Image 1 (spheres, rainbow, N blue to C red):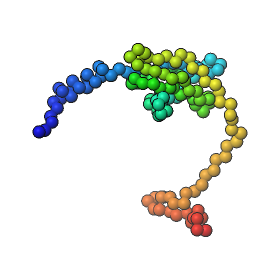
Image 2: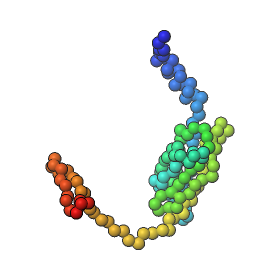
Image 3: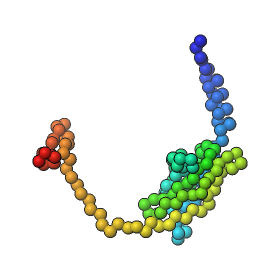
Image 4: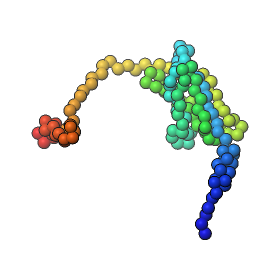
Length: 144
């Protein structure tokens, strides 16, 4: 017997799934230790059970972030960039009693490690394609 689902049944299943599955949000504001707003900083939402990445977002020009469409569960937020030290939030529990979690103002400390010198080295590849031809650079061969 063939199983045939009409478009009406499929639409009904999609609508009921969306009605019964709640979406949760996590929000907050990022600032540095001088209370300057931190724009365009990465916010990672990770599962508490295995620390796998669940969702990510970026703070806006006012330092505010809002991560939505999160399913019920236990998570933590991770913040950081090249200019600021990483920070991990406490556990965030989202369930029917708490559908939105406000982390408030999150202060990121500046990254104090600095690089003294950077050396950029360019090397010609052993094999490259130029004008439709394959060119082998014999000087870069390991059989010298």
